[in-house]
Length: 493
Image (cartoon, rainbow, N blue to C red):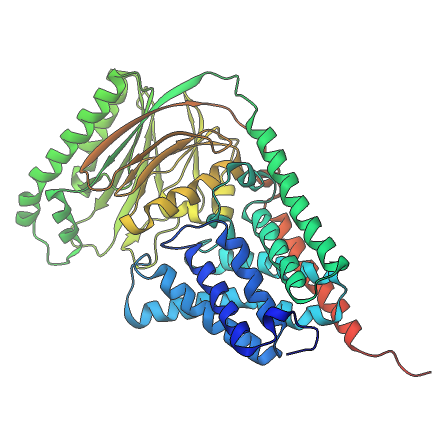
């Protein structure tokens, strides 16, 4: 330790206890738990510990704690086990430790204002790289630990990077006060708190605006599989037509249930009906009759349909995960899930979300895991008013995944319709205000109606994307150069 350490960190036992407390707070702020304030306080304690110890000791212990925290937070949420889960926990834990390591190496030779920016800039940069390169997209991003809708409005300007920067800046400034109480460090902390308060006030004003466009009633139909789940056997290369014939009645019963619910929703005034992901499991040879029935319902009830199907070719090792957008005149657009979950037997991925012209307004199409990739959602063409994104979750991730989806609504200024099987269906307006939320856990079918205004809200994130992430990446380089310059003594004359 250095002589400048704060009193809390002068004893080895005390500093380790605060490190473990910080790790525990980080653990309960994400994954299976949800405590937003912990995501602000925990990193401050970890940073203070890292700064109070030699780089090798601080970085090593911080990395070990973060790997352990990730394992505790995400065990059971990620559907892998054993060594595969251990490898994922180590990978994410190491990635999460990188901003702490950068902070420990660069801050000693920087003045407090500049030093306070190292951690937030490194945090944003790390999360940008992970979101772009990881097969799991933006899972684990700091912004997903928060629920304050006024603060979430910052996503319309800078995506998830905006909140990550604020949270990282507060943690860095608070760590500075813990270690070196004084006017300089207190001033930096006060500035970070003031900036956060200003963002909250701006977000509150943004949310006070009321949409003047009329609302459109949409229905979200979420259905878990029944007997038709046997269709997954169609992926067996040895599957026979006789076995398919045994499964077909269950598929037809599922179709009757879904289309019956669709017609009832239309009778209750729904102008658009969306199904949850993979609501129907269909053999390739039965797809034409399935789509013909969907078109007939759309025409008969003058309703816009967003129906989903897993299309199986008997004997093939993969299936197609498809969302069909059907207009009341019968015209159809098919979209294949662009970002399949690693390991899922899916084929036919599209390169970007489809955008279709529908009577309710231009609509972007995505499916479940697609929404975990912010840059992928932003790549859609046109200027959609709606984002229809059917999903299928599992109980452990239901609430977290629905919160993550709302970020895409705010970032892109579009109304979100997300019918979800085995999870939480949610519909929001273009600023992320909920119009409907319904748990579909433990039920075979669920219909939720929502009146949602069809308003396009222009956002800076839609236009400029991850500008703050790239700015922070450049900032890390500049701060590294300044730190190096401060470490190297001037040459003797």
